[in-house]
Length: 310
Image (cartoon, rainbow, N blue to C red):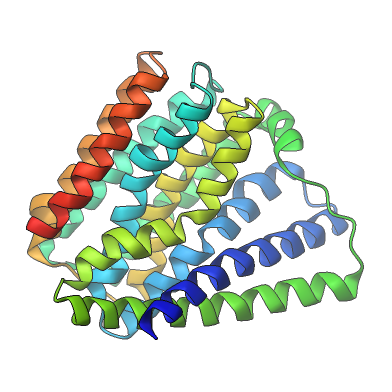
């Protein structure tokens, strides 16, 4: 039954996010909201809803390890697994110049998280700080690169022409499906951790993290197949920023997150190391070719095996 909970939760999160995103984009376009805002805020928020609801639900039920593991594991999987898979399909050799700025923000967010977990609890004040940093980042990105990003956003955002009733149905149905999916996934993952005698942190860092990253994986594979590596890289970097500053920020404001010692000594340092390695490939203009992609996938398998040993 627990396997069905996990599987049903993953399906619910995937389709719930898709429906909510379509409905939100349609409403924004009907209200003539600029495409840039749709791309930066609504799309970013929509694709992060699975992580948000799972982390909030886990924190509220006392499963802080799943709440934090979900974000840390997602960020590690985004780079080693998703970038690795996508670069095997189509090597990453070019990306938008705005990615350089975002890469520094991604590094700063990872360093900030490593610093915050040293206090054993990510409290409401820390959560507000992370959300404030994210808002400042979005505003800076908006005013700094408005013209260039607007042009990219026009390509990246699918225009929706839906009736008002259908838009409302998509949004409400998407939200309901997301809530149900989050509940099923957290319940199933918690029970599996108990059944197999592994920690909730390991389940959060692996099964839950990869499951909530399905929207990024689907988007990344489609971008790679269309040879749009710039869009894929932008999505991954943006997702890693959103995961820390938005997901953990909002979650800790709602319910402070207790931090297990392993996160500060192993999991987050690994995430930071992976982030720095990925940043080096981007900032040094080396890109990610198939040999590097293969090494990333092998590293992810090794990381997953090592998780159980810690």
